[in-house]
Length: 207
Image (cartoon, rainbow, N blue to C red; front, top):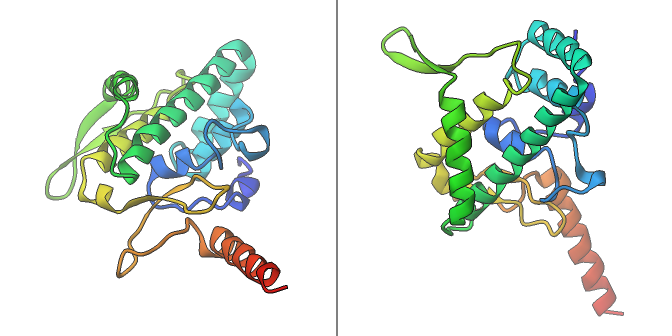
């Protein structure tokens, strides 16, 4: 079984697959100290944790990556390129801005590749889109992420998309609070840090 314990310790919000993917870095472009996807193996571990792929599929991909390390490195670079593109497009939406035209062009090119992996499958009362996975494709875990972003961008939930208000965090989240006033990706982490900074500053100003 693939060990995903330290991925869970990174604290994914588990709101939307695409948001958890953009949140694999605290800053964009990512810095070494704030980067979760430091290797192809880490990308696979994240994909298992997020249920994008199964343990069995992960083992096949890791074996393939060992056989073709340069292709695995290329797949990791592509994954990070996709993440940064998604972040710029979604962060613009969170800020009620139009995304940059070049970012939208890049996203649509990535989406076109993702859609080639989509299949219509029957459900109980209707049909649904399913992203088919190919264990021989080292980029296979990226396509469900891209499709998740497309679904979010065309849904009402896009109105609730926010970027963390912390000075040193750029995580994206969905504000589903009752009055839609949530400011932090996590009150436990970023919210408490911000409160501590404010308290410290007030204490300094009164001395």
